[in-house]
Amino acid sequence: MSTNTFYTKYLNNKNLTYLCLAIIICSFIINYLNIFDFKPDLNGDNVYYYALGRALAAGKGYTDIIFFEETPHSHFPPGYPLFNAGIMLFTHSYSALKIANGVLFGLSILLLFFLTKKLSGNLLLALSTCLLCCMQQALLRYSTIVMSEMLFTFLTIGVLYLISLINTDHLFDKHRPRSQIIYFILMIIGLNYIYFVRTMGTSIILAVIIYFGIICIKKSITFFKSKRTHADLSQQIKNKQALFSHLIILGIVIVSFAGAKTAWDMRNKSIGVTGSDYLKDFKKKPKGETMTTFSDWTERVENNLTSYVGKWIPSAIVSDNPELEQSVTRSGIIQGICILAIVLLGLITLKKLQLLLFLYIGITMAVLMVWPEQYGGHRYFIGIIPLFIFLFLNGCLELINFITKKMPLAKYQQLIPAGGLILLLVFFMFPHYSKALKPQQNFATFRQWNERIADPAFIEYIYAIDWCKKNLPEDARIACRKPELFYLFSGGRKSTSFPQYAKPEELFERFKKQQISHVIIDRWFRHGYVTVYPMVKQYPDHFRPLIQVGKNTAKQLPTLVFQFFPNAEKK
Image 1 (cartoon, rainbow, N blue to C red):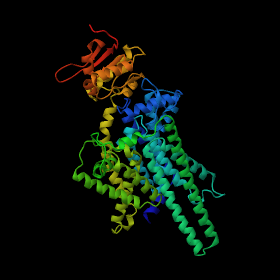
Image 2 (image 1 turned 90 degrees about the vertical axis):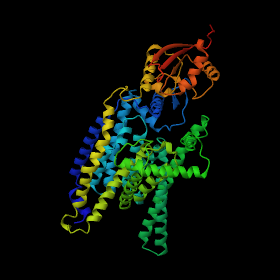
Image 3 (image 1 turned 90 degrees about the horizontal axis):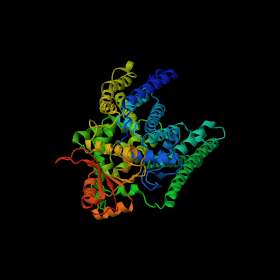
Image 4 (image 1 turned 180 degrees about the vertical axis):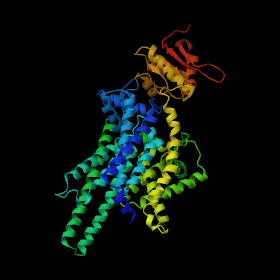
């Protein structure tokens, strides 16, 4: 009995499928509840997503509402804020958006189960992949943050699964099931919506275009070869239908994507935006310089290749959370190469969608090789982490099967790969994943930010924000660093930032022009004391201290709130 026959006979009936789904759901709920974090994440991007969702829900359009002047937004694509807006029609609860991301993650894992089961024909492999994803620390972290990673993951896995369901050779035949067209329409909608969720979504769109383009070439060769060799007429007709079916699919994918991109570009052009913030960031070096020479680019590729091979990809598969600044060791690179070799083996031995997965993962990683190294991390390839885990486990399974193939254990040969995989999971993967989750679980037990889990300077800053919320009038015009965090922690109040560096007299005139009434000077962001405090010292009659948070010592500066009087007379 072959391994595939064994899996088909004993591990692929419907009752076991339902049991696997029940196990996955229970595992997801337990792990998610253990790491669910009520605290707002300090990444400013999630506040922008929240505010943009509120603006859309309020009928203000795709608008920045954090600052004094509400202006059209163009940096983040509108897909995830639109998702948030749908939830905010019923509630403005920040926790509700976090829970919605958890639901997306749970649905992603269920889709992943059906996708991996279909690709591998192995129920145990599909179950193992999903159970590890339920415990993967990076995936769980982003499932409780108000950011676009989970919607992106859900859509990409959904698109891959829908493609696996479509019989592309006969999609436009008269007698094809109606469900095939429904799958295709959903795939096109999902694929184009991905573009509006994350810029990195272009990688899967390009992968799909190239994938169907290659199939079209293959079908063309097959059709013209059968015509040239005068093959059976019915076979020629089938080859012709398959070719035209794939040409139509490719055309629809390209035209729909071109339409979606053109619509977004036209919208940005209508508000005066002709360039991309991402392109500006793309040329930045870690210390703020600009990429200029060929050696700059080769150095970036080398740095990214080292960090992703030696740190980020291995830690995603074995579930660890290395620091951005953590250096890559020689042993880490060797370990990473071994892990990637197993992943490649798992990809090569797949029977379905092998080429598409190769293109999607390959394009994603190729982009990350030239992306600024200061932005490296799990976040930037979060959508393919489940695929890496699946391919790694599949590679381990194939490796065990290859090693034991010639052993004198023919009677138990079909059981050995499954047993080896279970041993790998029980004695290595699950314990390591569980250990990696402990810090996240401990962190989630604190429902509010406090000195035990955050920099005291930040705690002073949010205390000052809370004081402003309770003691200053609604029409107060406040200047501070990170207006997005002020917006979140003040319950939706507007503010404005100040430049990182400016001369006192220039900043004074800027405050007068902006009609600033209050300013927060904090030590969490050094620019408050570097830029604003010298202005306060130079114009003491124009600033009245209202509150001091923290001690003023030789080693520590306090957080200060001042009221600004632009027209005060000197005493």
